[in-house]
Length: 211
Length: 195
Image: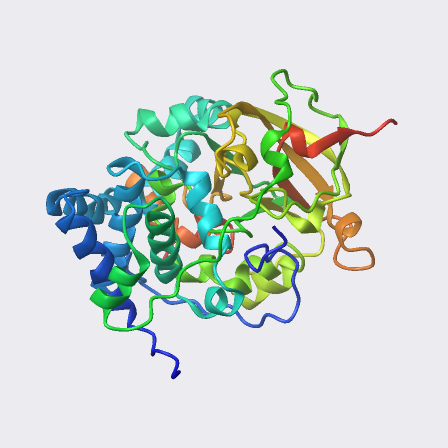
């Protein structure tokens, strides 16, 4: 989905604030939220990691931007536990003693039913273009590189195709590629000709470019 | 109808915890284990990998060929470390890591990511204006050095091997590792000069 999570290249954001000697968790609830996220996937087996990532993407945009990272972790996890029938939204709200905002519903994704690319279609050095797709569901091709042409630097092993896995599609794996884009191809007229962005992209997101 | 006030994040977290425990879907012991698991994942692990790569050419070769296996040699493996790729800086090429869509990181060697890495500001900006972001964070790169920004959009997890600082000949692995911060492993800082 073209959601608030897909931040790469978005303008208007300011200074990055850093903290020295930052602890792993600042507050005890953050460690609990992390543990609940992990336990929901490996103990309850309520959902997979792709569904989890998508649940955070589905948060209301204003909530997403103002929430702490572990608040996003908790909101996505709680949303899926409710959607999968393990918990009820009313019960959570009653226990919390106030409103408990959850993520927006899943929208169908046409990408979930794509035929898998079982064999790698690309090799190191190939020129490839990212498809100009904008499915309403989970997709891991960032907006900033869609429609752009880059060069394959490396072919990684096969990993589960997230668009299918996040939408209850058939579990299937295909290769990903580290594709290098010249920064000035992504944002013409900006930056340095020496700079590039390397994006890790599943085979199904790419098409061959004829030289 | 008056809009209900949002419960605090502490109350919401407690609500999910209590509901799962009461239904017997998880145990308190499960949650305790997972809450403490990140203690083993820390940037000191990645720093030890870098120090070894600086002092042991055979290890460096193995690390560049298969970082997952090379990190596992030193005991660093686990969730979000299933496929690690090491990015070696050169005098002409600087590497920096981001995950623009969430906050994916190589947990076993970098630890859980710091807040700045997870911030909308870093995620939005570093792909588009890396030099400005790095300069603001204290790393002013020469225009002659190329910057490669690595977007963690799939399942590869990256770590940067920064340049070994001058004046560290003969240093032990421990002394070298102490020069490598989490920020250097992500690529927003250089390894520190020796004191």
